[in-house]
Length: 158
Image (spheres, rainbow, N blue to C red):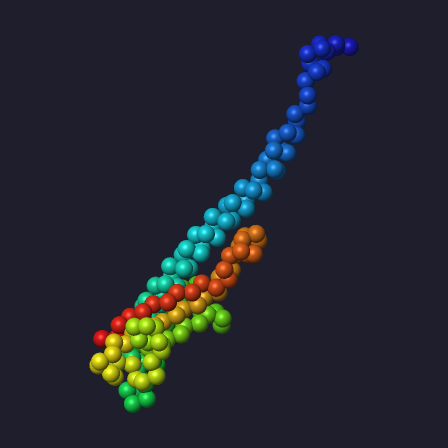
């Protein structure tokens, strides 16, 4: 029989300590990592929605109506093609809950009922508002993060 010294008998057992510490650190690390990924997705989608609103507003300001007699803002083929292109480029813009609203406004952002650009004394602007649904991957952030991203662009009618 081999005798153990008193020093060998007094050492605490640390066989599962690393596993316990790893499991305690893993959950906050994963939540922080998912939050960083959500932040990146949110910034990317917000930037894309803003760019889509600007592109649609530029095209609509140049090509106001399909038929000048019955002017419906945003009905031109160029504007519709730009909207279709942006729906293919921006994630979430092609979903049924996404919305693209186009209006003719004054400087004070009052919607104009007369044909846009018809009165040369008043400066008219095209206002495009794009709303896109946004879903967060992190369960904790889904309670506080916005579920809709929105961007508005104003362009002067030439």
